[in-house]
Length: 392
Image 1 (cartoon, rainbow, N blue to C red):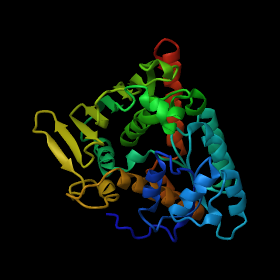
Image 2 (cartoon, rainbow, N blue to C red; image 1 turned 90 degrees about the vertical axis):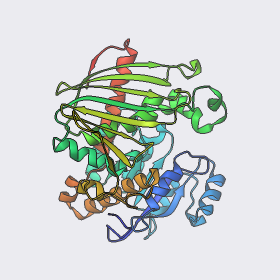
Image 3 (cartoon, rainbow, N blue to C red; image 1 turned 60 degrees about the vertical axis):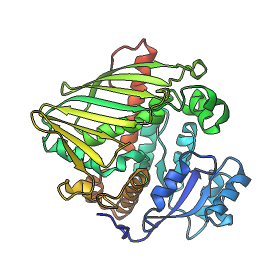
């Protein structure tokens, strides 16, 4: 069980690019990184495209005014001159900027934590991966939902054969907050998400369902997609060619089948994510709307509910438990678990501790690459008339 004691020798000096006053994700990053003050310390930032607003915001969250920078280029340059300069940077900016900022950060000798989807193309991910390996640095992806303890329980139960052979994968991430075009007109954070030049080739597939797809890979790391079919719609015509609804069918190499529904026009829906893994002996069901419970449904037996924080869970689940059973944990704890693992990975990389790196389960650059590959194949299928395409 986690209690905030240090896992690395000292906190990492951390900065943010983006994540300022108007950001939808900046506070989540800070809640995650700073939950354990033994892992990261926020010492600098280029928080906003508007330098004055960014500086005002940084000061209001306790950053030294002299280290609130007008842009990331200035921050990387000035921090490199300091003995106590930043060591790691989080990128919480619109998708189109991820690659250039990550590239500059790695060349400045900084470890990188980046929003999803990581980049526009898998080629870009491979270039950054090669640079990170050359520099001996870590690149992590903030699949923030993936730090929930019961997902590690699912992973362990599937690995131990407790549901038998996986046959069916049922994934969903839907909400109704974009059921009309009203938010597109008034929210800066929403406007860029439906602009292909900034968001990239997808809207809901890249913005939300990459989380769910990564969770499926987290709990079933042995399951590889052989081919998929994607059918996507723009129910709000002004969003075309980007989709606000999509269905993806998947055939896995072991013969299993899967489906994923992603939507921001599921009017009235407040469920967010739900995953169901069906095996030959039993099924597992988890939802982030009730993340403290995992349904274990064995054929021919009464259904069971496994609760977070209980001693009967796998050690890998309780290793990232924070508050204990009956005490509610949520998304901020999940983000904190991801950020703590980023810190452990960065520390291990610097010490040359390959054993820790090999055993650590966290969303690394390979997870980012897999997410971008999945999006590329979804777009390829949908753009060619929703046909089956080999997963390349």
